[in-house]
Length: 71
Image (cartoon, rainbow, N blue to C red; front, side, top):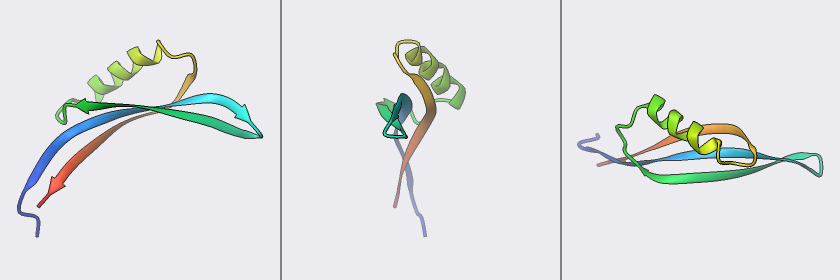
């Protein structure tokens, strides 16, 4: 039985499309850590959009990764 839950900092992961190589899509991920666990999905997405504007490649996926410790 879970007695305690502790919210740890989340992270933001952006996957970028680097183009085709040997018939496969080449993907690169950029991860930004120490996102507040209570940050709303909309706020995280807006930050990701601002970061995407600085990138050379198109974005495939934006993910907020939550991290909870159970005890």
